[in-house]
Image (cartoon, rainbow, N blue to C red; front, side, top):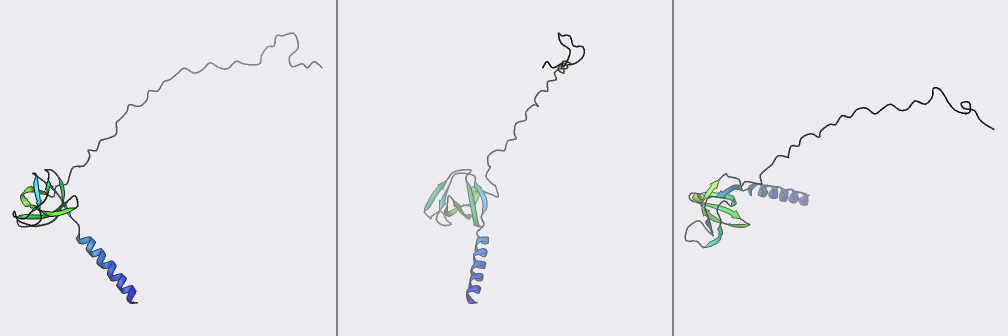
Length: 129
């Protein structure tokens, strides 16, 4: 019984932790440095170019905690465009084609008529044996 309770508790803890780790999309307005802490005296972790899509984790006062390319750090809040999503590939409509032309031919001539008057050396449908 205790094994079932511990499994239930572990699954609930996992679901709760997964729901808390959701990041909001943001984009950088200008090229900026990602720092290891909130403040200009902290060391630079990496350089982020302008118009880069970052994951915004938390914002407090002038600094925001973000992740970019699986590296976490802090950037100035004024360098972010919060709530902006990166533009994806343009969506094009499929080409519209003209319908194929419909050709109307005259009807074929009627088939030859078999029958009627027989002109020949033997009577019609006569067997010769």
